[in-house]
Amino acid sequence: MAQLKFQKQKSSGGVGRIINHVQSLFVGLLKIWTIPIVLMLSVASGFTTYYGLSHFITDWIALVITVAIQSIIVICSLEIAGIHWKANRLRYFSALLSLLVALSASVSFSYFKFYEISQQDSIHIDRLNEIRVNVRAYLNETIQLKATILRQQRQALEKVGLEVSKAYLGTHPEMTGNYKDQIGEGPIWQHYKDLYDEKKQNNQRLEQEFKTLETHIFKLQQSLTLLDTTTQLEKAYLSFRNNFQMVQGQVNQLSSQFGHSLSSPPLLLSYKELTREVTPSLAMWQSFSLFAFICAAMVDFFTTLLSYRLEFTAPGPLTKEEEELIFECILQFTEFRINKNDELEMVIEKTELEKARRYSDWSRMFAVGLLLNRGFLRKIDERTVEFAPNIYPIIAEKIGEKLMKQKNMRGNDGAK
Image 1: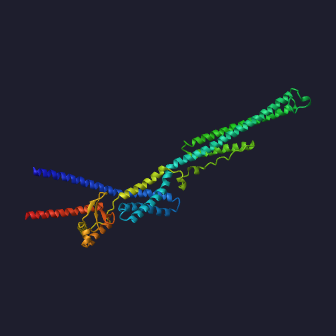
Image 2: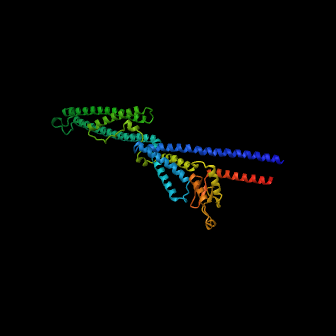
Image 3: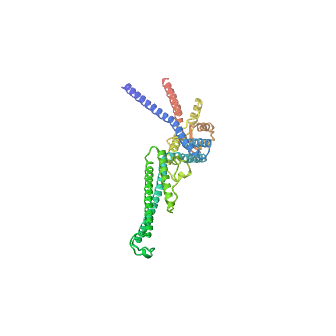
């Protein structure tokens, strides 16, 4: 029964060990995978930053500044992750200030690229809407001019027709002598009749010109509507400009012929101006795009976050002699506790008893300095440090070896 129980415990312990190894491997792979993710995010952010910078300064200078900005973001994020502000306030806040400046520059210039991507269609639509509004305002003014000219010409025709009627009835003020108060056709009547016929023909010709103008206006409106749906924008826009020029030519001819003046016609964009890409400028901040800003900030945020969460490994592994020395020196410290970061924390200054005995702690402080330099310890303040995650396996191995030695020694004593 005892043997069966032992086998079950051994089997259970083996399964737990396997699960622990799998979890440790998974966590380790995630940490390793974090490194290329940080690099890819940094490259992506660097591309958008370089794109914005290159519109203001020379390309090679923009590239150098971009590399510096992205390097500062990653380095300062990693440095802040390993610094407690109480330990070295000047170093902590200088790293934080450098990070904030680098983030501000990166987000600001990256914003231009995301603004172009997110607002390109809307900017094109705004350009078309501006053209549409200007052209429609011009057409409304043209229609008003047409109505004014037609009304004036009809009034003039009615006036001449009234003169003809008066001349026929003999009541026209210009009639004298035998023609006065005589009903019928006479020389004065013939004169006004010729004027009336001429005016009538002019009105008919004018109405015909207005019909032609209306045809061109209809074509112009059709081509303007087609700009929203066509797949051949260049051809459609060229047709629209030609129709507008036809309308403008006829309107200018009519306005000069009848002594009317119109406001200046809208200056249409060329096709290249209509389809030109968005050029980054400070004016983009006036039409601020929250979506573009969030996209620009999101890339740098994830870069900073993952860099901050990325644990530093030691620059080089400790030798067996260094591990033994460090383990023995750490054992000489007496004050340990678990801090708010769920890390083991120890006090590195002398105790009151050690100070009274004038104890020399040079060897253990050397070990602390070595571990701080290698990244196995983190300084919290002037008197305390905390263990970094990569020191726990070393200490655990040494404790295991020590316990094994003690167990072997007890076994040997029992055998004796």
